Image (cartoon, rainbow, N blue to C red; front, top):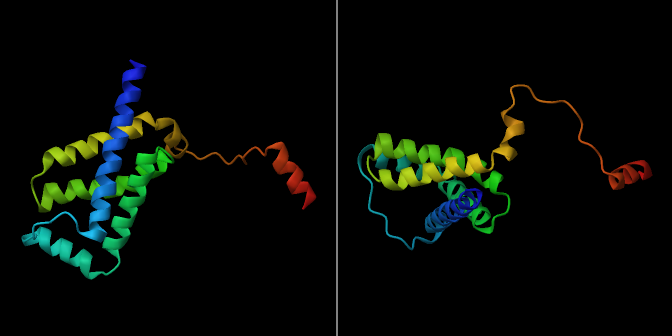
Length: 148
């Protein structure tokens, strides 16, 4: 059972990483055609584009997080960076541009499943009260500290 969860975790990480890496790059290189948006969805996208900085920031974050997920390094950080992006994607499709529920569902389920598999990394920040303990210094750190 543990082996199946590990394989599913790798698959979810790679799918999520690929989705955000490809669509993030598309924001810069425009290799996938996007149909024009109209109505409230178009107004929202137009406002984001008019800001001049939000789309590059958003797409850069997607590329970075997608790269981290594909590489397997800093997976909790990548999931943390993508969480607000995914919430906005879901809200956009539920409220402004209904449709694509399968893709939105796949992204949401992948994010939640991966966060669950990485729950040990998130446990310290999900405590009701933060610990005020200072981190334990390794012997090398102590020697450097006393030398200074």
